[in-house]
Image (cartoon, rainbow, N blue to C red; front, side):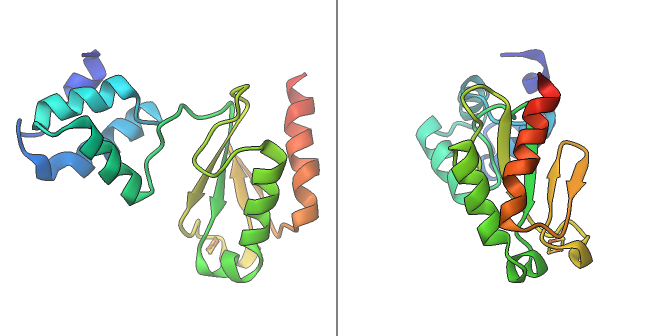
Length: 154
Ligand code: FES
């Protein structure tokens, strides 16, 4: 078991399955995703089969199972962003990057996460790429945004 996972697990009573979600949240906060060794370790600690943990974690839709990309894109799914076209932004991003939300591109450059209201509804729809915000987006803006990060990396 890696040290940081054991530190997190030690905050919770051994064998208590009802601690699963907070444990997974803590691990994701620490590492950015849930690695297979971490999930196995959690299963041992709370005495729950790994398959069941994956099933529950997938149901909650807030957990990642792959490391984040170099550029992590958070895409708001709140009401204002939804009304102003977030769905088109999601589909354009998924098409350009050839991944689904929650995944990371093969080259490790980009990952996409759908999030709740980011508190900037007057600027909707918007995405956050690492610490940068791109606001009042149109579907046609996505190619330029993705390209700008790729070019900045060369
Ligand atoms: S709904 Fe997107 S920032 Fe509030």
